[in-house]
Image (spheres, rainbow, N blue to C red):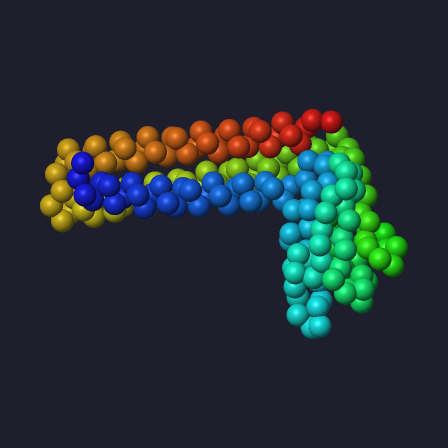
Length: 187
């Protein structure tokens, strides 16, 4: 196989992997009705004047499918943690028992499940756009290589291989997305 084609495929594969990784990360933030410590990853709290992730000031554990326990390393952080969780707009209401924060995760309503499913589809579309951009970049690279002496046959072969790679990654997005939607819609 031509060296330029291999370079284009490797670069496209790397960008497409990043798009899939980002999709999985974003879908992980969408809660499916079960309590999970990753639900609080996006929460930042004021820690001595610096906005700090919750994981750097407290332990977050799930005791069961509906309850999260946030145990700060300093008791003085209980109120800032509660405020940060409320301000993160996650629909969670922490209860302070002067030792830990207990967060009961409410079950999702049908309306909220549909809303979360739409959000997941939106994230999936973002990943597909990233994959298509990687395909465009790879094809542009191949066209540039053609201008520098690559044959027309090699260009067509390279574009076909890039399209096959794109199809594989779009299928992977669909698989990840359908699994998340099934998880969200399961009561």
